[in-house]
Image 1 (spheres, helix red, strand yellow):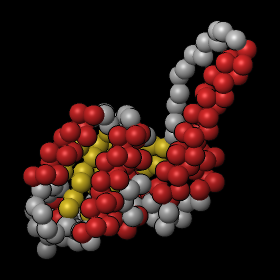
Image 2 (image 1 turned 30 degrees about the horizontal axis):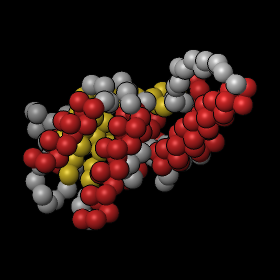
Image 3 (image 1 turned 135 degrees about the vertical axis):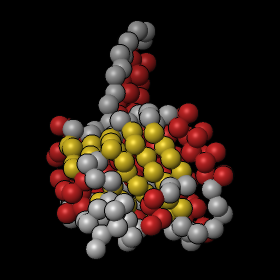
Image 4 (image 1 turned 180 degrees about the vertical axis):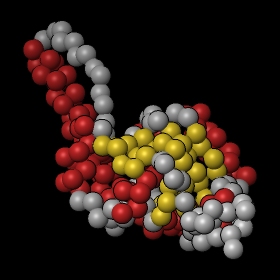
Amino acid sequence: MNDETTAPDSKASQYPLLANPHVHLSGPVDQAMYQSFREQLGNAPDEGTLVVAISTLGGDPEVARLMGDEVRLMRDYTGRETLFLGKVAVYSAGATFMAAFPVEKRFLTKGTRIMIHERLITKTVNLSGPLRSCVDTLKANLHEIEHSIRIEEEGFRDLVAGSKIAFEKVRERAPENWYIEADEARDLELVLDVI
């Protein structure tokens, strides 16, 4: 006999902590989200499992990396279990943030989609002045792009570590905005489960 409030295929009883995340993040990944993240983290209990939920269409990948690094440091220095819960949309910088959690600590709600893409740049390079300084300007811009690619690839490797997805597959699919549905993410072991 099923409880009227719980669907027959519900996994709520398996993961009761996910019902009440300690940190709720939604909207663009930016400095305002980071501030909210820090405040909510400060108000969360000091002990026990910490659940962080996010829904985002993306934003600043460096802010996502910063939030992820804070989660990693907490986990590494306190041994505290941290769980990721993606809701509705985990796009772009949201996937970057998700990469900070091991695959066995990641969950998605039904119908959620992950979107992975390459970092974007929009830049105009103006050359003016002595030729040697123009070469330096071009080299500096090339170095910025090369370094950004290395950071992007580090993130892709972290995202798929422990899953059935090869790094090369992410690199191949990322230029076309790779959308992964929740059930597919579970089947690829990119997340532990879908709730």
